[in-house]
Image (cartoon, rainbow, N blue to C red; front, top):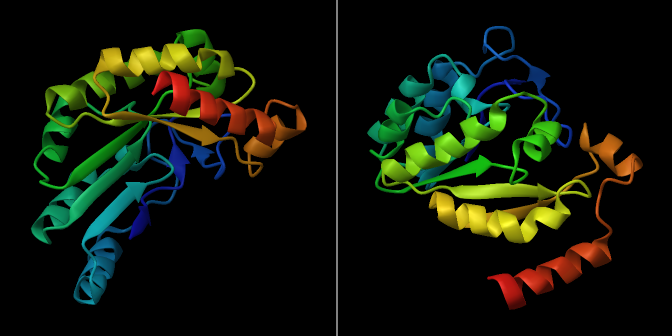
Length: 210
């Protein structure tokens, strides 16, 4: 079951397919009520629910995030978390490590600050995302890194593979730029890769770089 915990985000990514409102402090935009979250899980549990996915917006902006984790843990559910890493402290990483079944994805869109922060719209976000990966690795939860491919960063694919290995990530996933919300502007500006180029890149990654 997917839960979108907040409509706000502390980044302003050019490619976001949801276009959440920029809310760096997590104080303005609507948050999923804890009571509704708990009620939904209780109703779905007898139907076979065994795992939840927490995303957003930026899920770690939720002011009661640790309470939500406690509910998931109490119900003995697996946890999947998608985050930009800006708020993934060692303490948060330790809480996540308490789940026997867990997976975390961190978005990093380039191998240098200039590229990543051009995409993400906030200075300092590159180093914070890398530190989030390190925090999770230290807590025995090596995350998946997700890179959204576009004209701006496609030449960094091989270097991104090396960086993911160096950071200790569990895997590296490449997403295709979606023509929705903010991503629509990038498509119109020809920043999206043609389908044929994506297919050829996929074959090259599978054959030469895996």
